[in-house]
Amino acid sequence: MEPDRWEAEQRRGMTIDLGFAWMTLPSGEEIAFVDVPGHERFITNMLAGAGPAPGVLFVVAADEGWMPQSAEHLAAVDALAVRHGLLVVTPYYSKPPQSGLHAHFTAVADATGLSVMVYDIPGRAGIPIATDTLVRLAEHDRIVAVKDAKGDLYEGSWVMARAGLAFYSGDDALNLAWLAHGGSGMVSVVSHVASAGYAELVRAVDAGDLATAVAVHRRLLPAVRGVMTRTQGAITSKAALQLLGVLVHRTMRLPLVAATDDEVALLRADLELAGIS
Picture 1: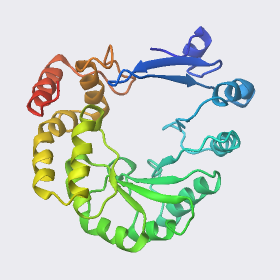
Picture 2: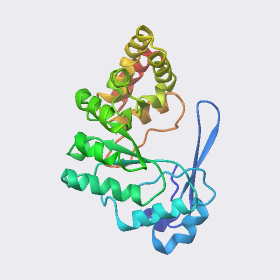
Picture 3: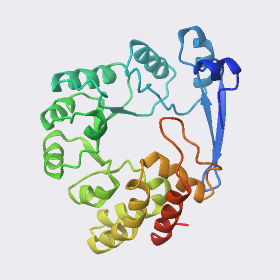
Picture 4: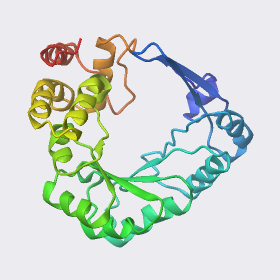
């Protein structure tokens, strides 16, 4: 479903007018998306689309990063009283020092009244967020949580002990481990197709039922393997959602490419082993 309807939009790769897309959730509930332009020349179109929206998915282009206009757009969202949080990733490629990371996340938090979850993913950003930096960031009133894809249980335990940030697993293979160390939950890729299972896992940990938590964790291991280990996770997530009938295709935007038929066959087998079909 392509929200950029105009030939000029598709040719230039830039949204001009409002675009629309929708999907039906497994529950049967339908949700709609409004794609709004970000260029200052089309600010009235942006406000027309964002104004009635109960939530905003704020996109920062990976080839440009956080720009001055990003703060302006965020201020506009704030002025429209859209009260949902932000997930802010470590800046890519530039490998700033820890002081730069602190300044970056603080600038985003200062630009909005929204709550901020810091995303620590050194495998993609090229640099981790140090424990001391997270402790300093926790002093900001609006920086309230961290999504961890670093996988360092020892340092993560120190973050939870020292910073008071809500700590979320960003690595599905470690969901149980992080919950057992005191994590608040997970921001999960595999939950696109296993949300009920991971909700059961959280309930079991909250109830102190380790045996059930371990059983659920092991039951979902094939799904983690299928979605996360053979190719890029977004590719297999979309293929999995197509297998479940949630999406009609598994087409990706470059540089990502759609899962091959062989990859889909292995994915289907893993999902079935996890009881997901």
